[in-house]
Image 1 (spheres, one colour):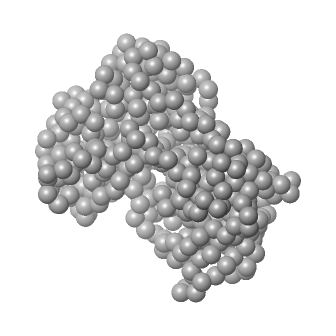
Image 2 (cartoon, rainbow, N blue to C red):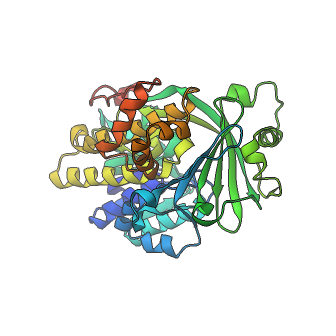
Length: 422
């Protein structure tokens, strides 16, 4: 390992691997420091079709097609009583190859993405624990990390924080704020033998509302007959007065949810119980002098619409383009590096508004589409991940006449947070 690089990327998940591949393709000297050892478990298995274009650019599209990942071409909503809505079939909006996507086992998928970055010339070091980002004044100049039990200081022209929810820079500079209305928790596991639909909807992600307002299940069909099942709800409901056995809570929630109970009637759990917090948040800034934030290090949205990997890949791609342009210009200022931020923030905001709509007790997706069929394609495009196109935002004008939706929060300019804040 050298002591100086053009770019250090903290984290080898989908956003970090994407940025590393693109920057290495441009000929930059790139070091990825990944805390874990791949393959490793991770939640967030359902992709959005808009990932197709990033996969194509990264050179992994053929690997995805050759895999045995479950093909996904729809999302379907199920009411608290167990009534199924009409599926949102992505190819009905555009019957092209790119509107099909996959349900992935993240251990395999993330490993493939990181290996692809290696194949494209990025240097990858796993089990590297980045303790802090080094600053000279307000400029990031490298990292301090423990690698193989040895503390190292490694310098770079740009630091890309792709450290996920750890959010090394945003925590160091106190840039993160939470969404007070999207504070949920999840309990999940994996089942074999769950009842799936047939035909086009066999690989669909199902969003199944619980009888308790504000809660829902995900149903994600994976390969080899395994289905990812998880319940999401406010933590004060999930855990308050219900003991300390999350498996028992999950079983109770399944039994009480008609749309889920019938699908798991003949299924068996084949993995341990996992728990996680699904607190939505975003950073006040996406960049500073010598650094950027991408993926979950920049922001995390409620997993309702499975937007996590799509936003990780897109922010990794757009962030890498901004870093390349900054390095080529010899200008790694916050203003130059942060040119990608407004597009990513706006894409997140559009998904966030649709998340708010779902949680509003006065809103039902099926009823809305029946009343306003002209907007079904707008919603389908958001579910596809086509959130960077201004046309899709038209649907929110109608929704705002009926329910409360969140306002956009602008990115702060450079200087609003500083290295001294840490």
